[in-house]
Length: 85
Image 1 (cartoon, rainbow, N blue to C red):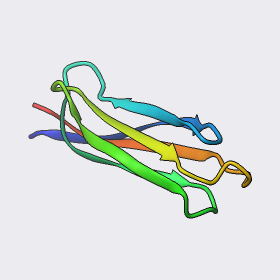
Image 2: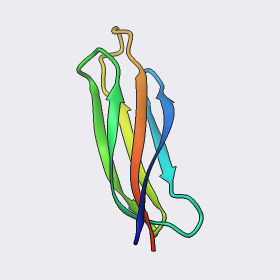
Image 3: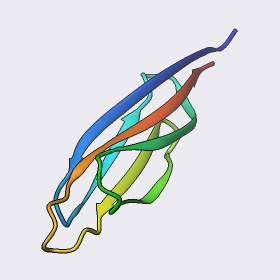
Image 4: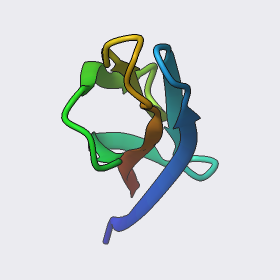
């Protein structure tokens, strides 16, 4: 029977910048799904990409498009759903 596991990796999104997080499956497991969660209270954080990276990870990039006169920044969590054969 296959075993499913869930992993996540987080990183800060700098004010007026972008960041990439990669959630990597345990050794021998393959990624079968994933996504990204944005943690922050302002509406100018946007997902630029979210996709499986190779066979064992999920990669996500988030950017802060807030105007230069607004304090921004936030946090992203990349999530991976992994399956061990």
